[in-house]
Amino acid sequence: MSGLSLHETAFRRLGGSVRVVVLDNLREGVLKPDFYDPQLNPLYRDVLAHYGAVALPCRVKDPDRKGKVEAGVGHAQQTPLKGQRFESLAAAQAYLDRWETNWADTRIHGTTKRQVAAMFAEERPHLLALPLEPFRFYEYGQRVVNLDGCVEVAAAYYSAPPGWIGRRVPVQWDGLNVRLLHPQTGQLLREHLRQKRGWHRIQEEDRSPRTPPSTRQLLDRATRAGANIGQLCHAIYQRQGQMGVRRILGVLSLAKRFGPVRVEEACTEALALGVREYHFVRRYLERQPELPLTLQQVDPLIRELQQYRDVIQLRLKESEAT
Image (tube, rainbow, N blue to C red; front, top):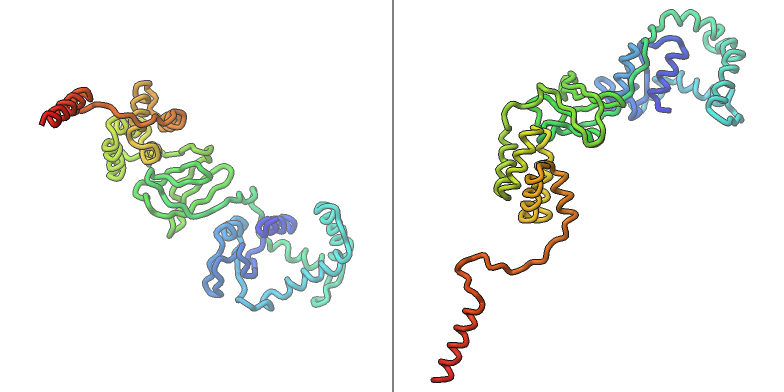
């Protein structure tokens, strides 16, 4: 169980959340320790914000700042848990619940000289009310907006607003949604539903009405590689828009791998069958064995071999006569 899940469990067992959490500079909570301006882990910060709490990291190498908390951990280890073994976490939790009710809450605190349960009854009304729903945990990372205007998350692709190609954006994702954030302000740029591997999710306002210059250059490269290669790539772009840019790159990569002649042949077959898809071209090339090289007379300047033979024989007779 992560530290964030333990925070949630603690808040729910207490019946409310606290306003301030004092913590060590553990990586799960603090990315860059600084007593005056620490850089918090975004997920940790958002979990606390969901419960109305803020993090107050300790000064580095200053354990006395939260010494009472550390003392409580040692007390629990040495008192109820010492020498105990449990078959499961549920069994251990049930044992601790009984210990807390029958002994911990009824004891007289060594410093305040008051019963623990009585002190908590006074403090409990000051806890913040719990939100109706638990926090939706997410994963996060940095992504570059690719040439097709999308970022990749788990092999699926999600559109960013126009003008973000080539820039890095923070991305959050969970089992339901993918969120793109502004790198400076943290403002939500786009929110998408999760897609299957290989699928795209593009909002209509992110589709450019004009062909970007970089895409035009790709289409020009395809046309130079072969007439039918260019025709197929243009058809892909006309039907799929920016989402088809990645497939155009795939066709050009096939031209490097198999050679433009074989790819031109595959694209000719694809156009003839009306299957204007990158996957058809790739499967065609992978299943067709490479033909051996053969000499073909395709230039009218090249004469028949018999004529060369006759000329050679004539020259030999003339040399013998002389």
